Image (cartoon, rainbow, N blue to C red; front, side, top):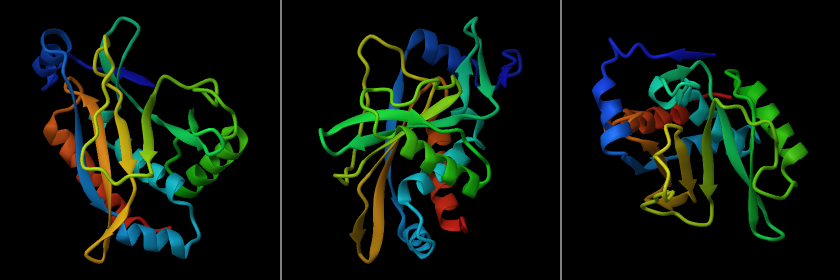
Length: 213
């Protein structure tokens, strides 16, 4: 379900209009998150990192309205009730990737099993889109597991910055006895300011710290 924003009462009305019409600006923010405790928990339960982490990110995003923004058919901004992860799978044989999607579920086990099934059913399909029927209410998440980076930026020439959040994470590496992983959020400034993005990253850190399986 999509709920249109009341532009008469919205506290970010001027910010949205400015960054959509005057200065069409987007940005990427990269931070290092600590996955030490998260790794320990998933290994104890014999869980896979990718769907477990996608769930945590999706859970935080689905409880943060600024990262569920979209436009209706008339171009009016609003918020989706639920957004679903669109994620990438890597093909080791030819080093290409495909993206696909799974329905977000609030319950971890339901989502985990669904994403595992979707990856088994569609993960070997080649081409950009491995699964058809992607819903309009989605967010993007992908990883660069070969590199622990300190900065990442996505740029699309000739297009406006996306209201849909793009989450990217890299290789986790040991640092002073802790395992750290780079996490990047790319978003239109019309949808979220630095405050919202910083809080999103902090909330993802809190989620992976506190989740129990």
